[in-house]
Length: 143
Image (cartoon, rainbow, N blue to C red; front, side, top):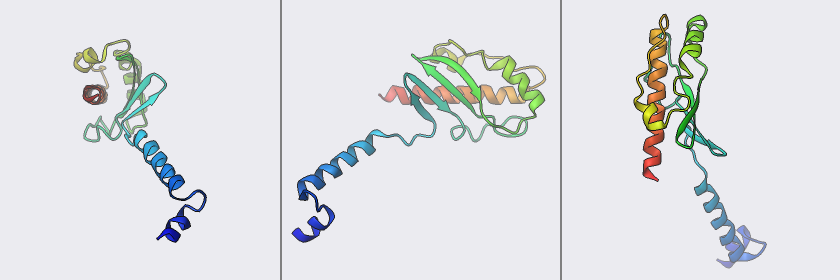
């Protein structure tokens, strides 16, 4: 048995091997595999691509990234989608800044009007934002 252990941990024996295993387990437990919520410095980013697959605009999904800092929405960014560019541009110009600066609890329930002429796409973006913020609040309530 001693030979087998030394075969896997030849430089320093059992103690070094156990230390390496402990370090590996610690480091892997500290990483996140959450495709929805990531952190960059003091900003939390919510990506609704996999969170809101059931929400569709006029042509298809309208995922967004929600940037949150200090429990306030910093900005909303649209992600790649199949919406008609002419109409989705209207959504980006008329809708995306509506949540900027709002506390997340207010933003989750905010009554935001759809953009005239791009109503279905607007409603899909609004629902993506609500779902993303709800996810953020749910995850942070657990901590």
